[in-house]
Length: 453
Image (cartoon, rainbow, N blue to C red; front, side, top):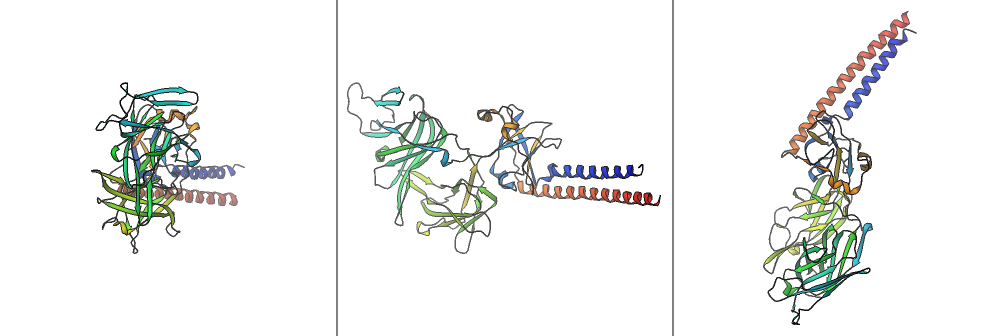
């Protein structure tokens, strides 16, 4: 009976050594190919980080299952991932809205006539009033007022239609208000109607910032040539889509058949494509296709007419295309050369995905580091409601913020980290194997001694 005790002790020691070494191998910071310091701001202990595109490219998996946050002691911190929400058609509703013309005197920048606003249970009534001296209404149509007071959800898209068959561009500014007195800029929009190679291309939709407003004001930049609107509608969404995060410029390679191709580090759900038009007076019809693996079939992704053209003394641009959000790793652009092409140099593109936020619970000593890029990694993310007890969606934007301090030479740092990681891992396993061999010899010797007795 007593002879069994040393053998049991050896087995327990062997199991403890193996399990302890395995647990260390699973969560060492140097197991990850890239480590980035985090700069914290605001009040903790929870902090949120908007993951930039460079870190998406450095990850091994598109869903960021291999991401971790470590403190100065090398401890992995609890975290949650909030995936970027795209503009889902299932969550969107289209609403036809009332529109009111805004007139101004010739040569005047004034855009808002006298208004009478009356709110009722069925919505808001807006009535345009003539001047007190009964002067005739000015003939110059300066813009339009849209009544969105009946809509409760954030506004994500504006769609317009007009009766003019004349081709060209019309640019306008977009302003929002809740009281028709104070106006906030929501950027600008552009309408376009062009014909090329027997086809007509129209641009009738304008992206909105995903915020609520009771009224929108559209002011033409060139009102003398402005078309007459025949319809206006707004798209609302119950929750606004996450902002876009963009990559750095990516240079194309040109295949033998003249097509441009780009290879991404991994498959990502791309939402938008920007093509750099390096030359003025460019008119470029393109078709975009993609695939998720090198030998897969190319799938149509998007098509459109890109341009950089003069209009009324200013330059108008259309150099972006929306993408459907499929996970793709390779992109191909086919250019209709009848428009003049993209020039002699390979074009540069930028791609965007919806921002993913990482929320972590601060613990231990700074500095805190984001680690990612581990093959075979499994997600350790918690549900956000578990990470933050009593969590409410509006609380997310009130958390402290973290910013990834990206290095200038990220690739060199990544290679160095991989080399260090491999050396330490092999060293750890060598020590473990030597320990196992020594314990095995001790066990054999003890068994022989026990048998001889």
